[in-house]
Length: 280
Image (cartoon, rainbow, N blue to C red; front, side, top):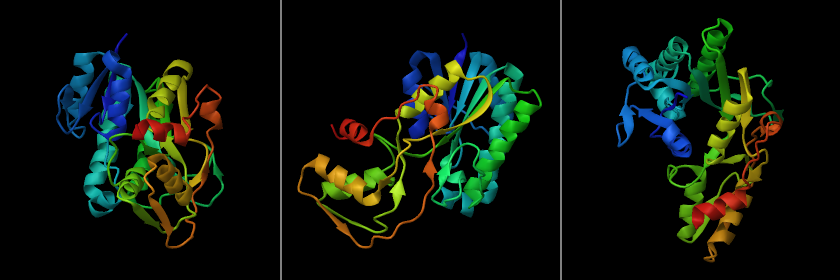
């Protein structure tokens, strides 16, 4: 059995997946760290070398620039990394017979408040989503032309967990409430929050049960308002913290259907259960 390559292994999602697969996996990232190969995905020969030297059978790709503001401000760089760099990984998979798994996003769905499944049309809303759509199109082309024997796209919802970026939604709420109070705007906006430890479980299901080309939404399948998120966190902190409401507006997000991945045995962790693990 070959190795599982985690591309973008120093990132929040990639590192969780790397730890989950343990000795079966090796990590690769542009940012060097202990036990993770320092490789720039925009350098085709370097990427190819990793596949050859490590007998890669499966590649899970989290690489790319994911901050929409950075993508907007540095569009040439975003295209170079998110599209051209990804193509280098696809070509290495093709040459070495590796299966390919790609980390995409539910942000591709238009925020119309309706239920979004894998057949729902995607829409370019900024340069970040443009690069993700282009990347997904490349995957389809590689598979349809016979260059990949297996290619799976995962569209992940908003993720949370221990050690996530402090600027993300849940860490921001926890930090504010730990200090005593948070004031919310758009308090009725609903979010689908996916526990980061559910991601490798979904990937493993696809590895074991899926063949060919498929797209899967991976989310909690339920929505919580900003206010309910904050109040739940406040109750778990049990520190008499206060949740104040500045306005009750709702920014409309689509409800994500996870019927397809759930039919294969995927069961998302409930928010309160995940929160307990984070806070303990």
